[in-house]
Length: 274
Image (cartoon, rainbow, N blue to C red; front, top):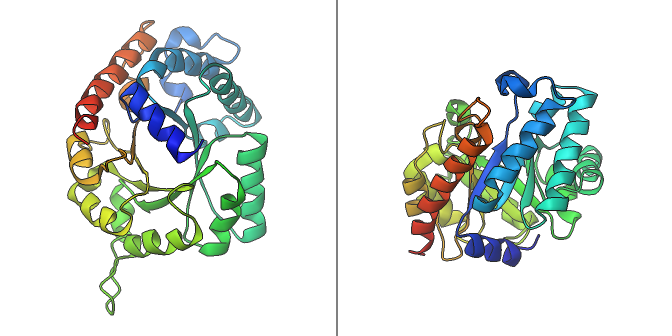
């Protein structure tokens, strides 16, 4: 998916919502547990209910890897279901890969060729040669971790270079733009960072940001939009638990759809301002 296609999808749906498919077997509605593949049944129902209100889906790979071989089969089935039924939705594999060059090339082959997702989250700690193999695929997105929403983000990401005054996350933003560009690179910035989106935009004014942390983690959509939105939108805001596990009854999918619609309606008001 190109940047222009993503922007057009956002405008058409009046939404920049990404639904996280963090499908934990232990949290599934009990009536699905007798299915041959309960996680896949759950994912299909969630997708069908929320697709009108979002532009992207983000399966977190850990929730599928934890199921062993069967989990990878479920992930592949979920990706194929999305591509066949909702081809305009961006599929983001949240895998946070990143290793020495030849290993990263194999990860890139796995996700961009075998699984054929549209985007992949990358951990940039090992530097340029661990990231650039992912950037060789046309119309695929590399989403680099920059300023995350977890408490431990302060352990490293806010460390400041005494000579330049530049913080580590700012260096990651600046340096990684040399490897890619705003048409193939996004950055992860957690919704809980609030006004620090202003600092992010000083370094990366035109790149799309993948923003987790709205909903269950307490991030403010209003703050994210106030400080992080561009005239192209420039945001993909993810909500996972707040949508997919909003209800565990037999009406779980309907409730998920309602939660997604509520976020879409709020997003529409912010899009009308940009």
